[in-house]
Structures are given as structure tokens and as C-alpha cells.
Length: 464
Image (cartoon, rainbow, N blue to C red; front, side, top):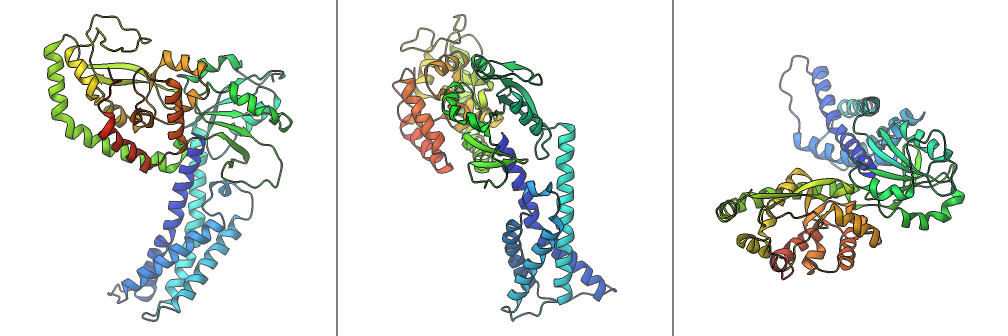
């Protein structure tokens, strides 16, 4: 996703920039050692004092470099002024560092070392920006890690915006198509063109990452009605803003390669904390569950094999993050030989269930193989429950904002499930609980849902 990619690029650059003082100190120490002690005799110095100095310099550099935009990917491609900002940033950092040494009387720091480290920091910063720009330009040339963008709009303004996206230097993009809006004069360059009525089919299984609403400012009054028509999409929606110079960028309004964009339907999945912290938690938790539950899963597998003919596992296509289709795994709980269409839900006392299957479904033990889906990255431990494709298409036409559930990964358990909304319960209520989860997501909220699942969500009267 666009904002996630920007966040990750910025995070990597910030981590590299913040680590530069440490490398500068190493280089300065080595050069001073060669200059003062060419015969490589052991040098005596207070290591602890220099470590304290490095910590202070790193903290000062983190604030100063952020102020001057040294760690801003957009500034790497700016024309002019970069060298001056790097020099000023290094000088300000070392003025603060030298001032700090006056309050540390226990050690006399080498002036040669301080000057050398300042010069080394300047050259390292310049080299970092050059290398980072080279890497981003290389990715763009090779077309790797492209964002697949659906343009909402098909006139000259939309195609001009698409061309700017294709020429963007921060992240390579690929235009998957254009959606013509009512009354628009379609540009000859807009290919392929889809109608608004095609959105339900486009939303699922087409690998889309972003939807960009590209309409001129005079048409912005139409955005509320357009958003209702864009409900079938399972991806974040942005609006391109062409307000000219002087617009300040805030949290919901962000700059993408010089193109101001406004979040209309943002998602928690684009935050670095969701991408990293939630994924790390998912991997650790799922791995632990599968390890601890392995004996139980082995017993279940043997019971299934001994009591009914057919495979141990059952897989079914479900719809997950961004409307992508994946195979979700469960222990088989129904008899083979009975044709069960994807549009058929289980019902109370379902005759298709095996005896073992009835117990597994009632206790939710049939869901254990889904931790493998979590390891694969198809699902998360916590999130909206994934639905079958037939029901996604059905509910997305009947319920407002239904596909907003697909802005995050589907989960084994969720806020709706721990509040009793499992099985044959109100879909409208379930969607409202899922949307609440999207608005209030945090790792702490995930842990709360897991605990509630353990205490009141595993066994349910609606699980059959």
C-alpha cells in the first residue's frame, strides 16, 4: 500500500541516518589512531566517556537531521540546497556536542577526534543520500515492487495525474485501469476504461493496491456521493489535490513524489506498527500455538481419519486483505461425497457434519490449522473473519461499507466474534463491530480480544 511503502522507505532512511554518528566516531577514531600513533602502539582513553559522547551526539543529530529534512525521502530528490542543509545540520549537531563536553569534566576529549568525526559525519550523510537515491532510482527503472493503482476518473486530469505517478521517483507505480465517472470526457490515453458498475468485479482478485480519485477541484463537492459508489472497493482510496504552492501537509494530507494526496479511506494496515509489530506478534503467537497444540492436532487428525473417509484438512477460498482471494484451512468436519456449494452455510444439526466434526466445530478446534494461514501471511490472529466470495459479493451490495473490512487482514478471531456474533447472527451488527475494530486497532486491543476469545469465545451456541 502506498502510505505503508512511504512509511517503510522513511523508516529505513531514518534508521540509517540516525546510525551515521556511530560510523563517524569509528572513522574518526581510526584516523586519529593512524595520525597520532603510526606505530600502532596501544592507546589509552576513557571508552565510557566516548560512549556517553556518542549517545549525546546521536540524540542531537536525530533531532537536528529531522529538522533539516535529512531523513526525508522527498528531500533526496529536491533540486538545490541539499549540501547547504547537510553542512548546517552537521555544524549545529557538533556545536551542541562541544557545548555538552564543557559539562563533562571527568575527561578531556580529543579536539582532533571531534573535528574528524564532524567531517566524517558530513561525508557519510552525503554518501547516504547518494546511495539511497541510486537504490530508489534502480528499483524504479527495474519496475520492482510496483504499486497497482486504479485511477478513479478517465479525463485529461486523471491521465495527467497517472503520468506523474508513473514518473514518480519514490515508488514505482503501475496503472491497472481507469474508472470513468458520469459526464466525463474520456481521454484517449486512458486505457483500459471501466464503468462504475464494474467495481464489484474489479475489487476482488485483481491485485489492486490503491484507488486514486483524480478529479479537478471544482468537482470536489461530488466526493461524498462518489464515495458511496466506491464502496465495493477493498483498497484504500486517495484523492489527488491540485491546490498549487503553499499547501501545508498534515497527517491526513500527505506528499507522494510531489503530488499532494488526501486520505479519504485510510487503513491501519499502512502504519509501521501494524506492518511490523502485528506481523511479529502473529508469527510468534502462531508458532507458539502450533507448537503447543501439535499433540492435540495429531489426535484430531487421527480421529478424523479413523471415523470418516476423506482428507484430514478442508480448504476453501476466502476473501482477505485488499480483496485478495486465499485458501483458508480447517480440519474437515463434514462428510465427503455430499456436494456443499460455496454459497451454503452450516446450519444447526447440519446432517453433513461427522460426529467428530460436530465436536470440533462446537469447540472451535477445527480452526487450529488457520494458524498456518497466519504464518503464511494470508491472515492475522485477530481481525474480521474472512467470508466466502459469494457472500462478499452479496453483502457488499446490501450493506454500506461492508468491504471496508478488507482494509486489514482477516483474523482467526475478532471483536465481533468475542461479542457473540458468530454463525447465523446479524451481518449488519458484525460489520459494525468490525469497523469499530478498524478504527481502534492497537496491539493492546488485539491482546484484549485474544483473552476474551480464550474466556468466552472458543465455545459458542452459534458454532455449528
